[in-house]
Length: 114
Ligand code: 5GP
Ligand code: ZN
Image (tube, rainbow, N blue to C red):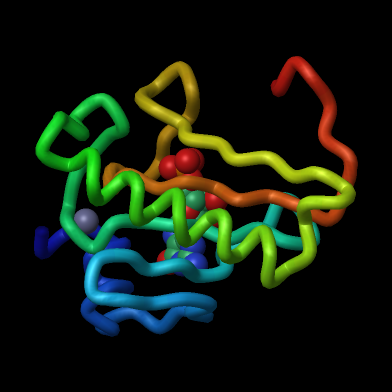
């Protein structure tokens, strides 16, 4: 997707602070962090929303989740707790239409979310 900001990050057309990369998954620090740790974990395949991920993408989502688990371990987030968020569509405030998992940690989080 030529006009997708996250595809541009994947293709290194836009600079980002990458914390993990393999052939299918990229993880990078959010440019506007909402917590001391705020990492975006994305599949390299362009899929707009969580609900557009179908059965063929399930192995890819498993890989994304594996990377989240690795980052939780690397960043030592398990003991204190952390939050994983996916926003979809207007009501949830999705701003970038390339599916991404927010991994947030390093502070307390309120519930319900705003
Ligand atoms: P959404 O609201 O779509 O769930 O979240 C999009 C996230 O992407 C936001 O937290 C925003 O700060 C982040 N973001 C938007 N543009 C860029 C960028 O160019 N680089 C990085 N690293 N993060 C971005
Ligand atoms: Zn994209």
